[in-house]
Length: 422
Image 1 (cartoon, rainbow, N blue to C red):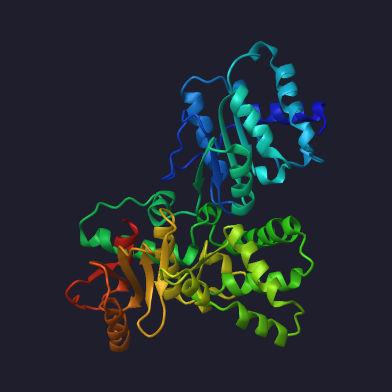
Image 2: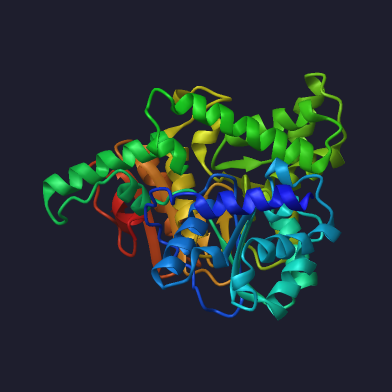
């Protein structure tokens, strides 16, 4: 890292006009005394949460020059070594000698690109900072470094693509509630949400440009977060695995079957590689493998997991959107609705399948989803599963179209838009 070049980077950040910021449900504490860590997939909104922190600091009277905002993926900072971080403080002190001794606020983006960042952050927290805010795109990398390097000094938050309520805000939709007209608007908005997905940049893009934005985004994730980060020796197999996962939301995940399928198509890889690559997708917040709802760890390990994805629209560059079942997208959206709040989730497999068990060890709610209940077979299957022995008091059948069905005792039939609004 070159100190003189670094001064240009710091000064550029100070002069940067704040972009328009749309509110998100997550509001970060400014004075917690902890290092605030944001983790999540790229372009889910982590950087804009940092901009919101900056906006709030300035509104509280903090001098803009006291805020050091850096992205560690900025090519001007590389090659980057763990011994270079002191140059950040030196460059800032030389730019603003009148601020020496004043509190400084550090907003570091994509810290997983900075080797040994946790030791530098720990030193800042212990000696110099008014507050520290970090973002990263790898759960395993950050979890390991936070646990070993920060030791009780941080608060971690997961950042997801837009929820349905956030999507309404981004689309400037705020219909008056409790009227048939409002219900119809919200139902149509849900259809649009399931079509568009929740990535903020995609939601705000011109509809004609959305396919190009999604293609560029999936390529970025593939090359930057998978191939480059992990030094993959078999990128072709990873691309096929990524294609399989993103185009198959809310489906059962069978790594052995994936291995056999890849081998039959001439892709050379071992079974251990399939499991390792799936772990990389999980660590990168791209997929969420959900275990069967069993207390026994052995049974949970033996049963296939259910695969959910961070955003179903990421599958569109790999499979025509019309071929990704809308009912599965709805089920994925319901999963993410709960996953934003907690991770103790499971499912029940077999003939009496329950799509989602909230509270996998001590069930609090069983949830099934269906696009329409007009079909008698669908109606019988979904309601019978929710009436199985051992069901918790709260059982929800989340649907886009109830088709006039009346809920059996103990089951609530609820429109999907209403359920996702919480």
